[in-house]
Amino acid sequence: MARVLGAVLSGIDGVPVEVEVRIHAQLPRVDIVGLPEAAVRESAARVRAAIAAAGHHFPERRVIVNLAPASVRKSGAGLDLPIAIGILAAASAIDGERLAGLGLVGELALDGRVRHVRGALSLAIALRDHGCTRVIVPRANATEAALTPRVEILAADDLPAILRYLATGAGLETEPLPEVPIAAPTGVPDLADVRGQARAKRALEVAAAGGHGLVFVGPPGSGKTMLARRLPGLLPPLDFEEALEVTRIHGAAGRLAAEAPMLRSRPFRAPHHSASRAGLLGGGSPARPGETSLAHRGVLFLDELPEFDRGTLEALRQVLEERRVVVARAGGTFVFPADFQLVAAANPCPCGWRLSRWRDCTCTDVAVTRYGARVSGPLLDRIDLHLTVPAVAWRDLADVRAPGESSDTVRSRVIDARDRQRKHLDTFGVRTNAEIPDAVLDEVVSASAEARALLGRAVDKLRLSARGARRLLRVARTIADLAGERRIEVSVMAEALGYRRDEAR
Image (tube, rainbow, N blue to C red):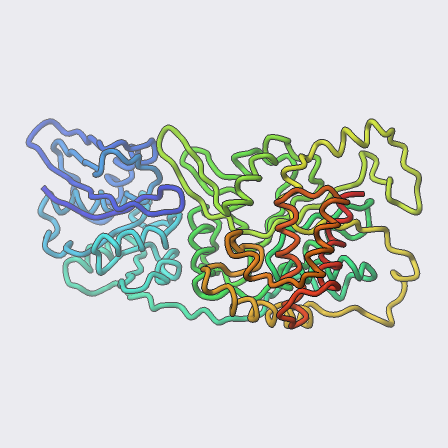
């Protein structure tokens, strides 16, 4: 009998699996037990061919492979390698003592090559936490897995190389911990390309500084999508811990490229309005993260917001509050991080021209009301900034002499504002003003009596909910941080109210 350690994915987390192999003197047969899914059951054929390609004989007896714990469903082909090593160790082709403290992850090809697997970083972390000091992974996953601290990552090309390593202790290269330099975002459109829309640009700056959600409403061609796509360029660079979180999620979703195994820029996700609830929030079998989790620490852009399925949008309400997605299935409950900035864009009516100065709207009042009702009030109430984006006049579009501020200039102000936030937020364990807990909001905001009186009058006039009023305080705190002011005065509160007045129109 032999025991080998492997791992499988459960959501975005790795689960260590003990592969037990026993060979009996019975008729040839391979049984894999321990709640395996189809890809794991089919590993018997791949393992048999890979072992033969490596120059070894597959045991012509009964082979029982048990995957423990049996209560966890095993999916994917990443257990091919530990199953093959376990069979060879049980057949005395490998010294079992060399397997102590060793974890194995990889899919086997029929010719013995070791193929890329999904979520190598999460799997390596799980094996390290289970006591492994060395982990063998496919070479295509080596740089990703090497992000795991306090464990030796060995890159393998094929099964024969692994067998030589187990026999001699040499033959596999140790993958060094990759360097992750902090750098400005690359490949993101520049804010200077957007002409006009000074108020919308200011709203983007406030959203970036405080981590606030934002919704643009305006006619076609007013620049809503252009503005939204420039938000990632205004955000501070990812630090190492954030990059590690984002990489784990994208690795578990199978979206990491071999040439770029670690994400160094904030993600920008823009799903089509036909996306399903599972595609947006996560799910499936096996469960994978959805667009909300792929946008973790970045931006989720929902264009044509009223065109999304109503039930899908309503499911976003809890996600925006908790900053995570909980997917409950019969096979288990999966938790996916979803701390993103939501940017939404919508037309004001079905034809789109209701707020346009150039074309007449052909929609009836009933059609406009029905179109607006596709997005519920409770969802809009959870979005901090509401802005009407009018069409840009031709004189502004044609003026090439006075380009606007660049993304680099605005980002420097955003970073300064976040540094000021950090001084009064680190105590509460949050990163941005949008996350300030209600229990300490009044203490952190520090608004003058006149500013609070203005807020009170506006709440009554605009008929804002208690949640909406509290979110206004958070926005006002961000505006004050951008200005370098400790106390919120009337002018700051008035600007914050301007981003809710559009909602009331």
